[in-house]
Length: 121
Image (cartoon, rainbow, N blue to C red; front, side, top):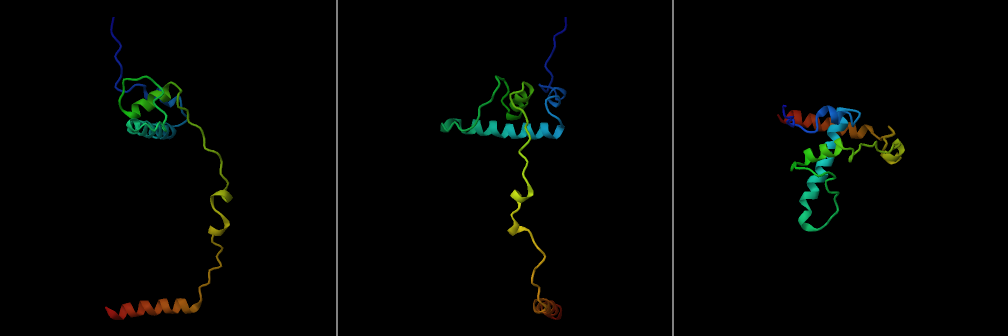
């Protein structure tokens, strides 16, 4: 009887891709959760307790491996952010209207400045 050895990567990529709808979402979700886990381990001695600890028992020490294990057992699930309308993103005061006052005097003085630079060389 042969022993089944763990692969180099556990959980497998195929298993993880089955938990998300795209490779991009898997990478983004894993990276964000790994950053949270890293922050959690970084603040352990300070007693802050603001970060969520790892949600699985694991022998892994690397935050990304822990994050992938959490995704594999459905402890971490990707959700879409709420929809934001354009009016909420950009207020009317920041949208250019095309009514800029570019008087001829300003353009003439700019052309004069360029002529002075050309004659100086």
